[in-house]
Image (cartoon, rainbow, N blue to C red; front, top):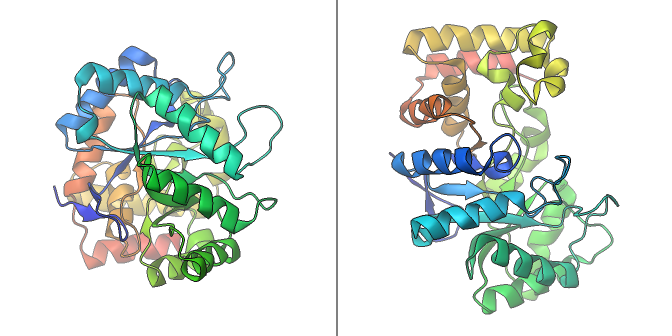
Length: 318
């Protein structure tokens, strides 16, 4: 498997990131361990989670994903083999408040380290922007965590182009740690939000891009082709907006390319992302070892220019 350098960090990662939001949500602890073991067997050792996962599940309070990951790493004694990313700043209660204050970040890392049963994380990310907290306060808090050895590198997610640029400029101006990664929503269907402005910022600043919703909540697997299919999974209700002329055009293109490569639409959709020069390691989740085969196939799938053009044309937004 061809590994990649993540931004300007010293982290060498596989071409796919595993999204840990499924741990404690659609996967219980036993099945999570099964998937995590399968990931390590496949050399997919870059795992992204967040303190808030999976608070939205009835009976959960947040932190469930980190707890499962911590138990798994301890039971396997493999922390040094895992590239571990988590996030802070999302609402951990019902207030809806995004919080990147120094106080919240310092408390958040201690809680995450306790749940993860480790003394450091490789990548600590601002989950959502917090307009009420000065950028320098957030970056100074991260600076203290890096100096203390609790965080190796920092990244951002869900920032506007303006705020991402402000953060990067503040880091340079005040000699504070710089965001080395960025998490945008990006896939064959949802391209414009990243490509219009954020992509150039990431390229210009050599940010490692670990895009999320890589399969558009499962739509790009080809499993959902009518409203009758929406009940097939817990994410089905969010896919209705993709069932339109543009969505069907993209699915048709995926079918054409998948047939040529004897692959699944999911593998092709991920291979398209992996082939994007601006993307380092798209985030994707699975809930079965069978689905994990699609990830392995995607990392080995090299689409040629003709097939990339078919997908580009079908999904063009301008």
